[in-house]
Image (cartoon, rainbow, N blue to C red; front, side):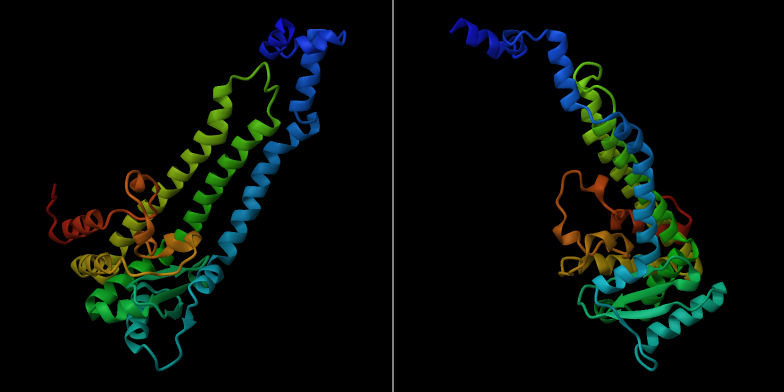
Length: 295
């Protein structure tokens, strides 16, 4: 009985019963736990390559993915002339190519822009936003979306996503391909590799997304020349944010307001939110309009 208790406390004693030294037993355990040496060497560069391929595909096809996931339909000639007229006015003002225009049949007031560059861009609006906003507010929203195209925010977001994916893949490669996990590496390293590093990469990506929204608000209000109209539009959109909208979470960051806000929880939501708080966006726009800093 004492022998069983000893083995339970130190499993390596079991190997000694079969005339194996502790050293040979440790080697046996290590060889089972560690991947082959070539695998260790392959993981880091392969992680970067995989992240690059994945995010290049997202960048190149993001427009099609977003439009397909929202069931957006291209606006035909002679329909939704308010949208068409405003966009034509704004892009002529900015000397930009005309984007393709789409309509989404949904009561939630929202809009988004997508496309890898100004020559391959699209702007989509929901039927809900046309019901809720007046012409000046709609112009402010469309100017915001055009500013995303002008600032090449899809490219910036894709680069941020690639950075996040690379960090995540690399952190996992530390676990699967990085050294002798039994004896030489502190357990905290693997906690950081598996949890902290990927979590930090997501937080950084979300922070970049929020920064781009602030930038689009500022540039958009400059294009339209009416920051207060965009501020008013954002407040109205916020009031209707509880209306349901079936959107792929992967493209939710493209919208002027988070379409999945009704499903978001509290607590640490700010850290993982793709959009800044509406109150903060409105405050900054009103500051731009008045030149007075509010606190």
